[in-house]
Amino acid sequence: MKLDTVVARVLALLIVIPASAAAWEPTKPIEFVVPAGTGGGADQMARLIAGIAEKHKLSPRPLIVVNKAGGAGAEGFLDIKGKKGDAHTIIITLSNLFTTPLHTGVPFNWKDLTPIARMALDQFVLWVNAETPYKTAKDYIAAVKEKMGKADQMKMGGTGSAQEDQILTIQLEQALGLKFTYVPFKGGGEVCVNLVGKHVDSTVNNPIECVSHWKAGRVRPLAVFDTARIPVGEWKEIPTVKEALGADVNYLMLRGIFGAPSMPKEAVDWYVAFLKKVSETPEWKKYTDDGALKPAFATGPEYVKWVEENEQLHKELMAKGGLLKK
Image (cartoon, rainbow, N blue to C red; front, side, top):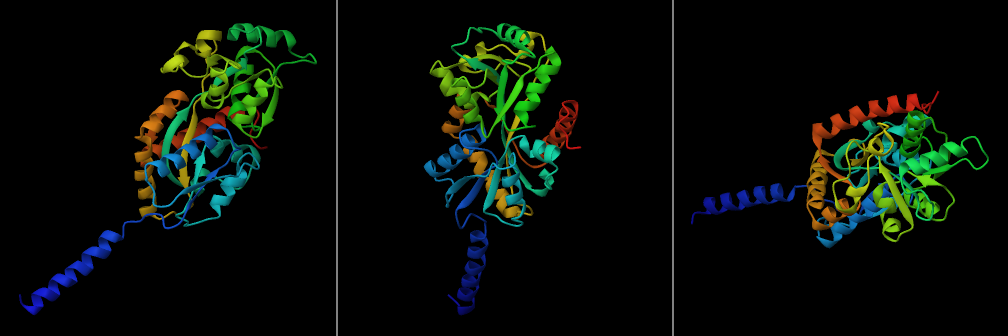
């Protein structure tokens, strides 16, 4: 073999090897921010994703879940907003992506971040303690009306103030002429624990936040806030609010992932592929079925369009409820 041929082949290898090795992947632990308290739906999903990644070896570096719930999630959003170009920080978002800046005026907007993927849409259910006499939503609403304006007016527990749970509570009040005393907590897990402990009379928890207590016979679901019944397992037995009360009150919540501002495209591509693999695992399928989440994986323009539309929807809902910052 001629010397120039050998040299040419060596040079070709030197060119090919770096190119193939250039595909981005994490080189240090990934900080996975949860802008909500522990035990709630966002926290559970983030920890599940981290666990699936480890079990199936989907990431060369671990995902470290960090809760930053202060200021209705503003702590988490402002933290990641300040990490421009960081490829090793992501955040799981619920609808406080919209509600927190709209209500508080905190200097943050979803456009400050890098959209990566919508993982699912989450439901809401009207829950009461299983030891109460309320077997149907009509039973409970009748009791709510009876106690309105009294010292023992019914308490509705929810995650945060001016967030999804309070928006839904106000929608229910306006649709049915009700009045609750709204009691905010740091996270959905804490909300359901307080329902079990009879510190509140009802909640509008996400299914995943109360399912273990339901299975244990501690809480009772009365109605789901969607246009159709949840189509899986025992959830199918729960009527919609429209069926149960004749009120057209429905709401679905984002479970999505964003990256730091100006995250490099090669990093975004890696996270999209990674999260797609997560969504195809049996553990994810079981999680969405058990927790009654709607599978809704989306990336790119489809995801951005959905976020834009839902930002406007939240402006309208919060304006109607008097929750926008004045």
